[in-house]
Image (cartoon, rainbow, N blue to C red; front, side, top):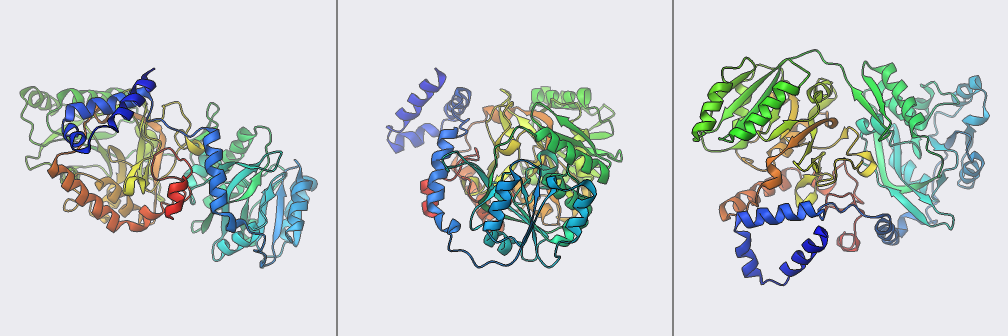
Length: 559
């Protein structure tokens, strides 16, 4: 019923003259009420249905027909290894049709014979890894060999074939995403690899392609991985074996690291808890007044957080409400809390930089005053990630007060700037490729709850006070840190509320709008390449909404 009412309201708004509509938008209470009402109605949660996805995919295939042309035949020599025993004959026949030189089927070989056979493969030729029952598009080898070039391996997007030959269920994957591989094994077929790399591994009848990729990434520091964003492999529809696949990936992770890995059977994802050295974590919380928010935030940290070696720095940016001032004076008497005064005009970047100057910890936490802890081990999980050499910034799963997703990673390009992946999806939703419930890499995460090494913070000179005083400073910061050669991580196990944003009105005053446009322009100019093609996303997915839908006809036409 709520959806019907709100659809009617939205339709009616289209009939209002623009001048009147602009005037109504200037009323923050009215715009705030409208935003809350639309969100509560569920209209902001617009994950495409299977029928909608199929229609979008059919059109996408028409637009990209040339990429699958049979005329693409000039390819080099290659080899293949087919994993498993399900329908391997169909896959073998398919590879022979496409000109494979040598094809091994692991399920047909005795345990000791598999590695021996692989050792006899020609190092000068690349080797394609496929699962039994999977089929290659006719142009697949051409594209994969071209994309392999100087890389160690390349993988592609996938789909399925229906009984009548229709291409269905596309999986448009991100570029190399190690955390997503460890948590979901998202790359598990259609991988072209340098044969010398394959020979360095121990492979048995039980080995899966997902664990091969995980082992290569954990054993080779400079592994070069490329991604071809085309569905070149048609996956076979088999019985659910995700648990077995993840168990094999878990074994690899535990063999190469000291991480603790648990299988979440509800969502079929691995949950990795990396060890930490018990460093001091400095949690920096800016505020002006807001006693109720600050109280809920700090008390939830103090009462619920299982990790204990932290300090809280509350940065008071000119509070003038007596009850807030009195409460902050009380907080300043607590062992774990320090209250610092920052009386200058509001500048989010400058306030946090000021807090860092006074922080004692080797790990810094940027935390909004409207955050409230849900999962007691949030800091333990985030800290385990941020201490890893390969990791830069670590962000959390943040929920609105009504439990819908507020933040589960940041995607560059949304709205021409940046936006939150899966925004407004239900808390229980797994997300596209399980990316709500699985820890994975994003190019950026929000600083509403973010951990980073002090060394990284100092190297990139903190947040940009001059050009990004309010908006996009966290995105810019994350991309600067990522440019140091590390990965940013969205930690799905760290769940917290982010209260205030759910009721905040639109930022529509002329001054604020002008400032926002300046900061958006700075982001677009500075990080043009990421906005054009975010490696943590996929160029075939929409930038009009945060729902991971395939691009529609209008978007494809613009390209």
